[in-house]
Length: 63
Image (cartoon, rainbow, N blue to C red; front, side, top):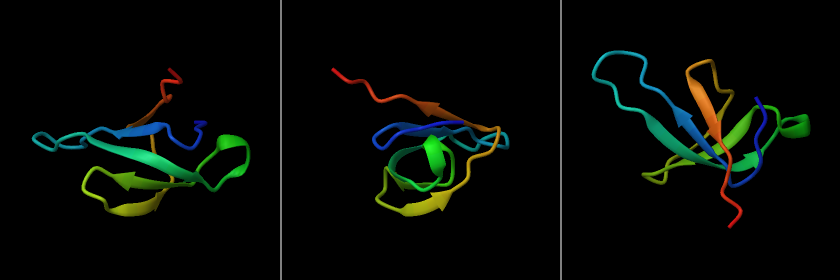
């Protein structure tokens, strides 16, 4: 998994009824775009994450 600052991280819900969560990647802490990432969720909460197989990086639209 590789990402850049400004990309979005989509974390799928792991159990029935749990919603997907979306976070903006505000800092890439690993080498060459690799995890861990510092992310900011829609509610303003920030965390350092090493995403698992339930996560997808959505590349920022450069337009």
